[in-house]
Image 1 (cartoon, helix red, strand yellow):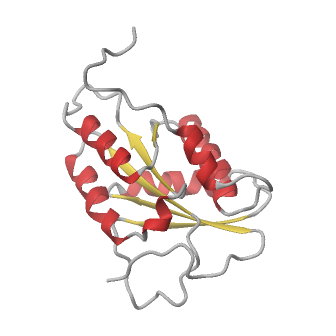
Image 2 (cartoon, helix red, strand yellow; image 1 turned 30 degrees about the vertical axis):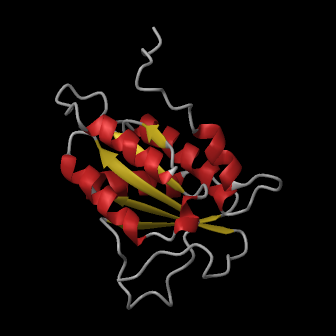
Image 3 (cartoon, helix red, strand yellow; image 1 turned 45 degrees about the vertical axis):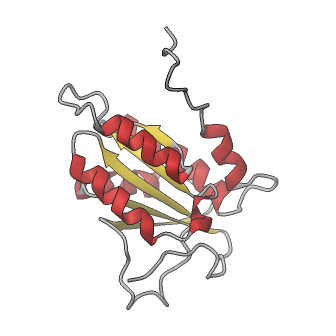
Length: 184
């Protein structure tokens, strides 16, 4: 088993690598295509995985992963458990602005009431933001792809004066206390 480390490989010139991890292969592929089809000024490599750890035999040829995105479908508890079990195979330095959770299926009427609070708890424990999106339409996927390309540019160090850690703090909201009522 291989732990995914962020600083064990040198970055490539004008290149950024994103890894999408999730149980729904069709959503992974659709989002990957949207990211690759979007016009960008740097080389983008998209890697797909259903879970971590990654195989050890390809570790030498594997590029440095600049951004790691866990896609969690809120209609599937299996999706959340895969993300949760995969976190232990990530070097703690990744959680400094290079790990995000993409929550899909939040608009579903069949949503389990336990999954969203569990995802938020997982997000808080790993200090990684949750982004909510639906990937059903092309325009939704394009919007998500553009958002991740912006985050990827920053995480790969391609934006002077910006860091992934600073970007991460901007995306986090203040945690609500247990006694506090939600705003109206």
